[in-house]
Image 1 (tube, rainbow, N blue to C red):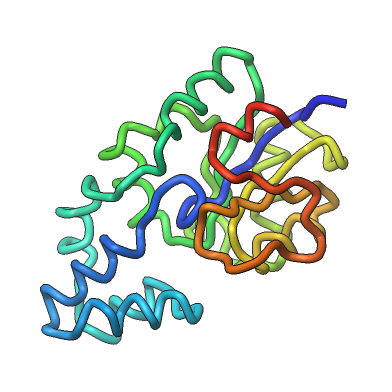
Image 2 (cartoon, helix red, strand yellow):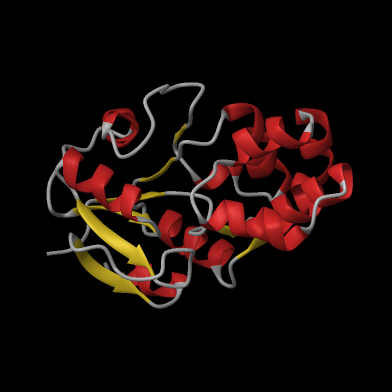
Length: 193
């Protein structure tokens, strides 16, 4: 059966943000980009790294348009919209970072709703952000609704919300979480859900 809705994580799923984050923090703090990247890959949040290295939201917002979208993202989101597929974003990133990134990358209008840490203070793997997104697009949790993400916390949040998980193998996760229903080798594979 075809997907009834597709929800997306952002970092490591829609955009390849670690290079931007590492470059920005290194430039502002003098730390090595490789160290910042290692911290990101080990699970340290960009919010904590910004605080740790003294990078302001204003510094971040000035450069957020440089976030590199994964190849094909804009076309895939456009095709999903053309098909009238309900799509939303659910991320643990704060809205003060997400909103300008979505606006400056030109993706804001593709999502019916974006749930972020400003609208849902409970981080993944808790399912609340996914449930809020589903409620906002009037879709009931089911195995035909998918959450696309790249990390184990994304998979756990999808499972806890009662929906299927599509693992973005092109993102930051090293292997497919056990609860993965579909493996996406590239973003275009979303169109087969």
